[in-house]
Amino acid sequence: MISHHARFLLLAASLGLANLLSAAERPNIVLLYADDVGWGDLGCQGATAVRTPALDRLAQEGIRFTDGHAPSATCTPSRYAMLTGEYAWREKGTGIAKGDAAAIIQPGRTTLPSILKQAGYRTGVVGKWHLGLGPDGGPDWNGDIKPGPLEIGFDYSFLIPATGDRVPCVYVENHRVVGLDPADPIQVRFGEKVGDDPTGRERPNLLKMHPSHGHDMTIVNGISRIGYMTGGQAARWTDEDMADRITEKAVAFIEKAPRDQPFFLFFSFHDIHVPRVPHPRFVGKTAMGPRGDAIVQMDWCVEQVLATLDRLGLADDTLVLFSSDNGPVIDDGYHDEAVAKLGDHRPAGPWRGGKYSNFEGGTRVPFLARWPKRIPAGRVSEALVCQVDLPATFAALTGQNLAEKDAPDSFNLLPALLGESETGRDHLVEHARSLSLREGSWKYIEPTKGPQKNANTGTELGGAPAGSLYDLATDPGETTDLISREPDRARAMATRLKAIQAAGRSR
Ligand code: NG6
Ligand code: CA
Image 1 (cartoon, rainbow, N blue to C red):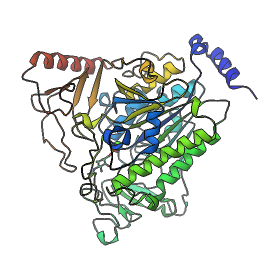
Image 2: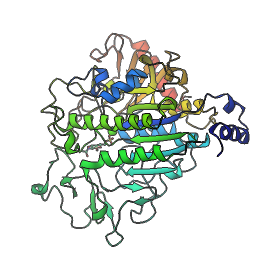
Image 3: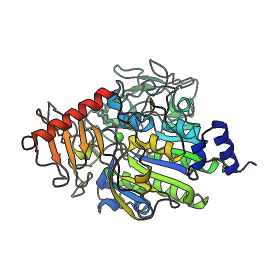
Image 4: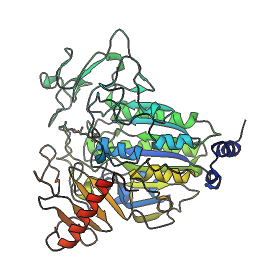
């Protein structure tokens, strides 16, 4: 069998990339990506109402970034930016995707997985996708579902196609719905009803969890969803064992990956997005109801991955990252006691707002990295880092140069990631309902009309008609708008933000 090193040399030679040879050994990469988990939801960042021992271990054995960001304050745009290295607000069609949306990232683009595949990695994605599947008009759920992850650089995929709270409620493995009976084809529709499956609106008595806003369409597993679906009965998922199912697939991917080749696993949790329906063994583990129990379940998923790496002797050579796709939300559409049982737990930690918000709570999320061979244990870094930087950072890690057009907003933050430097980005565009520019501790939010709170979730959204300006160094909670006291600074930041938008790139 050809050795890992020989294969690496051959690959380097065949690509003619001299600098590939000088790259450090290429670690395996496991990107653990949580959904709607807030900065303050981790024990290592102050949570006491829920324990997260696996994540705390990751932080203790690696580096914890206090100023780490999702690219956007909701899911689809964050994932788009993380996989392409391009801010989602530059492109139409990157907002929260419906369950039957067509593939948003086009085949042929340079992506996080294609960069790693190019470097010789075996690449896989397991869990929530929410980046659309199929051609224009959406996928054929009963046929070959493509394009999708396999067409943009992943060798393997096992997907929750959109989110847990919207149809279709089935898993997709590579190009096919898992367990589909051809005699019971799936139909999916958003907008009008399809088929005669009961809906939450018509038959609330059938529900085990009731919607608080939206989420009153087709009932699957006693929970009404966004959108309508009929057929595919045998293929429908059970929310209670979703974490087990996807963890099993993630662990199997690591186990089966050839040992003479590094691997990249994007393990994208369903937790702690709504509907929060953890397995019975996690129910009641916190006093916070399903939202707290879902955090415990998510931490269990992390634990399984770390244990697998330990068991296979891969931990030292594996870079494990953990982050979340946007800030926290309490009631995101179901009556699940999250509001009533929150107590004094602060999901966003010291930051104001949460999911959907221009305040820091929208995008400032947990951001942990462990690589025992290269990252000193127990580091805490204040460097400004963002998930949009992963493509350029991993390109650098694997000794590759990005083409000018690729990953236009992605910066190589390898020195910061490895704890060798406290310098991260000098600026970052944060994206919620409008854009904000961070420069050091300063934050400028462009002028924003409209309500102060999200009507559904009650989240404070931030922003003001004249724009707003905060100094996070003296005012981390964004309580004092300095826009009228520092008009010159605000104007300069507004000008720079406009220039970044106009340039179409920032790298
Ligand atoms: C919103 C949903 C919310 C959640 C969100 C997507 C309603 C009223 N709200 O439209 O429940 O699903 O989309 O969340 O339907 S995300 O984390 O995937 O971006
Ligand atoms: Ca999310």
